[in-house]
Length: 152
Length: 164
Image 1 (tube, rainbow over the protein chains, first blue to last red):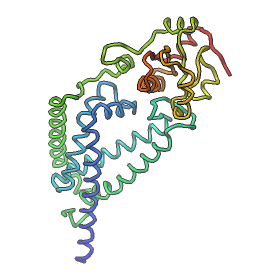
Image 2 (image 1 turned 180 degrees about the vertical axis):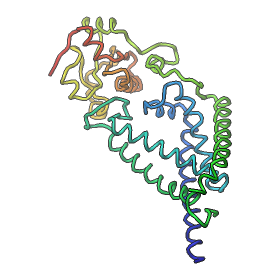
Image 3 (image 1 turned 30 degrees about the vertical axis):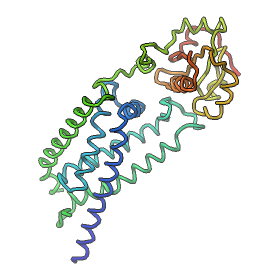
Image 4 (image 1 turned 180 degrees about the horizontal axis):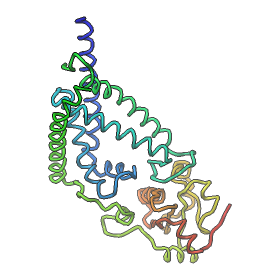
């Protein structure tokens, strides 16, 4: 019995560390290059123009704060919630753009598949999907599992 | 589920605090840094195509028409070869931005250094022409202009087009 709990706690800590590191790493370049990140946000053609810069200003820091919180284990419930929500939003945005044939690289609507950035976009979708796994796991352990709370 | 419901106030409180901290840090750093963004950016094509000198890369349809008929500029269709073949501005060559690497040599051969260049693509959201124009600028060409939503506007004005 003890062994199972220890194993669960290790997995929870592992998930927190992995996600935390990913978020911190993801935030750095965006903080260093705000204009480039703003252009990337703009290219998604999802947010209205007036929200693009605000997003580019706040989102990287949100990722950094969340990454740190995940690693040190503070504000567990809030951080897990926001992290999972963010990953879902990013995932949806990428799938949406993939589906409407938006070539993020060029920002054009194009249904022709040759030479487009479809390959990288599909890879980003897959990768984000991968990150969702530890996120869902943490969400489950934090809120939904009976008995043991995710208290690592 | 019971766990989740009970924790909603806690989740909300923590989330608000997290977002407040992140926003404060974001805005603070943005204000203090030299390359900070303006809170509401001008993302219109015109703004994106204006150099820091204030000079705009945007060319009007009328000017473009003149430059085409007077053969004063090299017109570059930045769209894919398929789109180009289906119809392009009469005086335009095809330099598909998405395969630019393959066409780079051709660009150097075709276009003298001091030539006027006009790039275009299709649609208000299309940034192929913009990206091609900026690349040409970084390659050393100094007289590059962009005809926004070029193909549609050219068609609507009933100007000379060609199909392959």
